[in-house]
Length: 144
Image 1: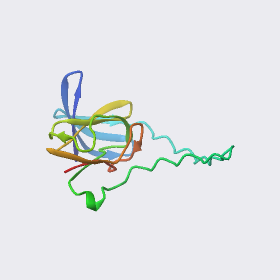
Image 2 (image 1 turned 90 degrees about the vertical axis):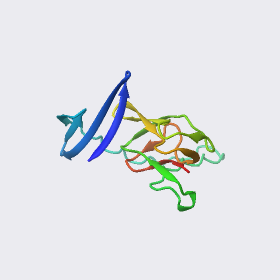
Image 3 (image 1 turned 30 degrees about the vertical axis):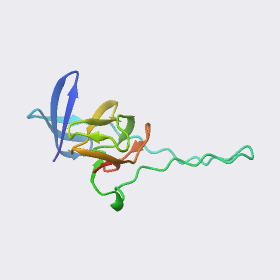
Image 4 (image 1 turned 135 degrees about the vertical axis):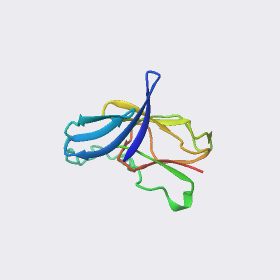
């Protein structure tokens, strides 16, 4: 069971996802059970190969977010709780954070989700950039 805490318009919500069967998610919202119908996920578009028109070198592709933090980084890896797009990052490498600090906003299913540091410490690395797409479990940043 995965548990999430959301704050929407000043109201706190505790969401526990019990399980997902097909496109029905069995959840508990503030202790009340609900069956939520999920929309079908769009199929991935085929990759487009870019061809340079001029002699200028093509820009290097943006690296995909890594699945796990590098072992050398150590510390607490903040992982994406669900697939989405990083909409804003509120911290910088070297910045001190508290466990309840919001470090970034992850947009998923047209909702902005606050991602908290989870531990007190210093931001050791940020593995994503604004507008990057991430999958569930991708490392967003490492707190040491």
